[in-house]
Image 1: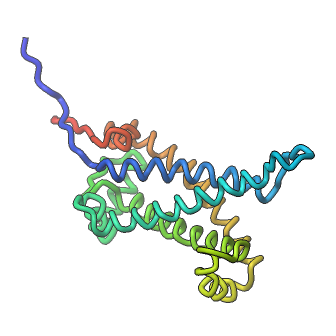
Image 2 (image 1 turned 120 degrees about the vertical axis):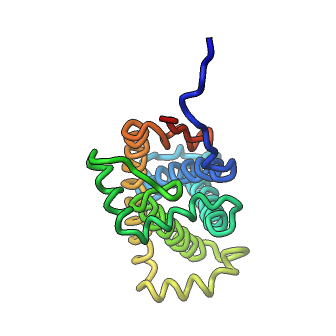
Image 3 (image 1 turned 120 degrees about the horizontal axis):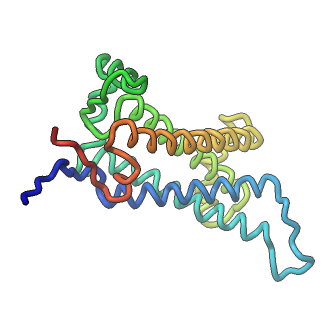
Length: 221
């Protein structure tokens, strides 16, 4: 008996994009948890100098904060200069009114989504905004870092951090904006996970497994 394949397989996410996606997800998770703990240290450390809970939490926050900063910069580089242009091709749909109409209709179960790249116009616009938010939260985080630690790298960033602090109205305002943007990320992650699962169910491809395996499957018929 002859068996023919019913789907085609296309590589849409390179190993680099997939690795940095999951590293960024891990960084955001750790930063949210440690960030809330730093703002409200509800655990009481034992009365000893051997264990310093707040110090460990803050250290983890710094490590993953620098990791998120590096990942954010690398992702910007990969988007503009990576060999694969599948993400860059999505910009064509953003500038097309008909693509926006098809995109919104598909979300209302009124048609299928046809994309020039890997993202629809609404999805692409959302990712651009959240990438800029990631850049801003990293900048505010570095400013807060420079205002706490005054030697080494923090000392090198001091002049720039002082200028940003003045422009944003003081250190308290930077902390507030850093906190607000944390909530933006929390809301985005919840919506992002829901839409990724929903998209796989709705369109039968480009689902969660594509960011794991890198491949997307399309029905031949």
